[in-house]
Image (cartoon, rainbow, N blue to C red):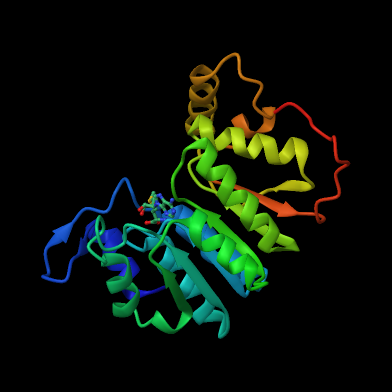
Length: 238
Ligand SMILES: C[S@@+](CC[C@H](N)C(=O)[O-])C[C@H]1O[C@@H](n2cnc3c(N)ncnc32)[C@H](O)[C@@H]1O
């Protein structure tokens, strides 16, 4: 594993350009989720990856490390506040970890960058959505990512504890040809049940796609089965 990542998680701190320590949590991706992302990309040999939301760059480090370990692959990260809010620490970390060759970075909003990638006819095998967690922004991220994603590719939604994010996942599963993918992540049954209960209590009357509430992890992985082939008037409540 990457030495910088080990250091960040053991000390629970990242350093800015002046060497000041900052606790990256709870903004940053937890270690167990980072490992799942890295292993997943390596296991399925996913070459063209993208993430919305970089912050201190912890998910970026795991994903770029996966590419470096495979020997090929390029990761695209998008974050409009890398400098203004995160003091460019994400980019600094990638450089420190010698992973800069595996990264392409855009300092803009995802709703501005993703259409540009689409116009250039780019393609993706994997995307991690961890930017703005509002329903509308998450849906727009998915909309463009779906158009960039190859059939058989994967999209991962972070923070499904948030009702707005779950609503997007629910929309996708009810209206689009995607399937839920089981991930290898050990969570105690009690912690898992506590999460499910919380999700139910957040929104008891919502008709979330039922199974999402019972995913014990905070991420949810979907696989694209086919291109969009809905009838013009197709709609299922979500
Ligand atoms: C939870 S943090 C990401 C954490 C990061 N993935 C990690 O593992 O450390 C959410 C990020 O989304 C970014 N963000 C917010 N709105 C965005 C937008 N419209 N487009 C892209 N990124 C956005 C924020 O600047 C922030 O860095």
